[in-house]
Structures are given as structure tokens and as C-alpha cells.
Length: 458
Image (cartoon, rainbow, N blue to C red; front, side, top):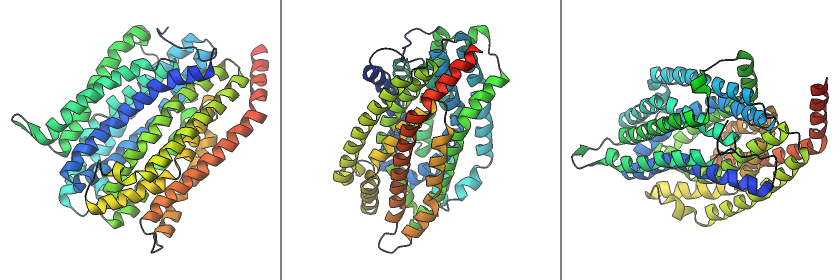
């Protein structure tokens, strides 16, 4: 069905994980590079422009969180169907994913555009111009939500097949276009009037449209669903939504909690909002690198679970823990030792630089635990137990609000109390999820696979 697919149920585990993970990591870097490049150029415009994009970005992140409802379940079911060699089910899950993606993108983008003034005003940015820029960036981004969703869906489908190189190549093209368009549309060039924040949003929109077109053309070579016609199967859709619901709830709540935390941060002014936005972009370098291993582990565990190979899952998890933990320690060292130098790439104003340096050093403490959390999440996803990491994540992420309020009220901590809260919650989540998955491997997985074999023989 798919050229260039990879069987993850045989051969070297390390080689299989790395060959799949490296292109995914590179693709993730391309994704964060879109907003990273925006931040570098917009940082030259000023902190208010960065705050405007930071405010709008919360609702772009909320869209991504909602889309997890479809993308997570689709990825799990496709990879498990591939491992079980059920090609017709693979086609059905892809077809359902395409239709559900279109509906969600349309509803969400229209809704946010209609209430844009109210949600931007919630942050009390204290400047009409900053709120105007945030609203413009938000509307332009909502127009591009449908392309962003589909680009992500096509990437996940191909990753599930073990083909992560094609999405990387396509997304690289989009990034190259964005790099060229950003300075031209933001500042102007050869008679072209600079558009500021709107120019940054427009550059990203054009890039994502081009990526979507390439994905659509390539999909005809790999999937027969467009030639055979899209077919919706309600029962299969329910299976996908059940798997995606826990992670979607987790991500949505995480985003809403992030918005609440941002509201707390805004009491320190627009500069603090800008610092958080830039800090999140820098941290995303670490997050997205391990998210690449997340994609590989989810596909790896899913295929091996479908093929009923528990020992291979156990070995793969331990190897992934070692790789991710080592990377986390390296990131911690960089964030703590070179915090000021790293942050100064984006914002150089004295107040912003001081806040940003504190942010990176405090967040740096939790990087290894964050990496462990991501790998454990992926492993639970691969076996279809998405509710377990969701419960852990929702619990400790929700606690960020009262703890942040308390710690930030301590005079000598202030804003640093908010950063410390985020770091501590990541430490707890990573530790608990690792323990839970190791227990799952020891107690549950063999029994589950034996039960599946017995049911299939009835």
C-alpha cells in the first residue's frame, strides 16, 4: 500500500527507533522553526509585538490541543493495523481522519474569529496597539488552521508507516519559503511595504498552504483513499475518538491552564508575557527533539503491540529512556550555563533579558524529567492506554495554578515562583509516569496479549 514503509517489528531496535526518530525530530524542528523565525524578526520590532504574538499563540496551541483528539487516535489505530497486517482497516482510519480533520478545522477557526476581540481583551495587555496586533495575527492564523491540521495529519500517517523522511522533506520546503518571506513581509523590501506582525502571520500562512499542496499531491502516490473515494465509518471514528479523548482533554486543559498562568504572569506587564513566549520557543527545541522520539516510540510500540511482541516493547522502552534521559541532562546543562547567551538571541532589552535568564535556568532543572514524561506518554499511547498519562498530566498540571499563585506571592521569589511551579510539576509527572509504565510492563502487558490471542481463537 505504501512505498518506503518500515517494519518496526523486526531487526535492530536502536536502528529502527533512530531511523524513524531522526527525520521526525528534523520535521519537528521545522515546525518550531516557523514560530522561532517569527520571534527572531518580531523581536526586532519590540516586546509589544512579541507579546501580541504570544497572546494569539495560546489559541493556536488550543487548536493543536483539540486536534490531538483526531491525530493521536488515528496514529495509534493506523500503526496497530499495520502491525496486524490489516490493510483495509488502515485505509478506513486514514479516510476517517481526513474527514474529521476538515470538520474540526472549519468549526474551530470560524468560532475563534467570531470571538477574537473578547479573548484578546481577556489578557488586559494595556495597549490598544498591542491588542490590535494580537487580533490581526490571530485571524490570519485561524485561516491557516486547516492547512496546519492536514499537514500534521499527513505527517502522522506517514510516521505510522515508518516513513518519516518524506514529511521532513516536504516540511523543509515550507520552512525555506517561510525564512525567505518573513523579513520581506515584516519589514518590506524593494518597494514592498512592511506589514509587521501581519507579515509574520502571512508568511507562515503561505508556507503552510504550499506544504499542504505538496502533501496532497504526494498522498495520491501513497494512499488509494482519494482515488477510491472517502468513506466514513462511525464505529472506526468512535474508536479513534476514544483513544484521542484522554490526550485531547489533557492538552486542552494544559492550554487553558497555560492561559490562566499567562493571566497571572501578565500582572508583571507585557514584558513578562513576551519573556514567557520566547522562553517557550527556546524550550521547544528540547521538547520537539524528544517529541521526535515520541513519534518513533508510539509507532514502534503500536506495531509491536499489534504483532504481539511484548519483550521487544520492553527493550525498546528501556533504550528510549536511556537516549531521552541523556539528552535531557545535556539540555539542562545548556539552559543553566548559557541561559543569558541563549535568550539574548531573541530579546536584548535589560528587563526582558534578566527575566528570560531566570526562566531558562529554572526550567532547565526539569528537562530530563520532561523527556522521560514524553517517552512514557508515547509508550502508553502505543498500547492504547492513553488515559493513564492523561490522568497524571491533568492532575499535576492543574496544581500549577494554586501553587503558582502561592509561590509568586512570596516576595523574594515573585515571577520566578511561577517558573519554579512549572519546573516542579514536570519533575513529578516524569517520575510517576516512568514508574507506572515499568509496572505496566512487568504486570499487565503479557496478560493483555494472551487475552487478545484467546479472543481471536474463539
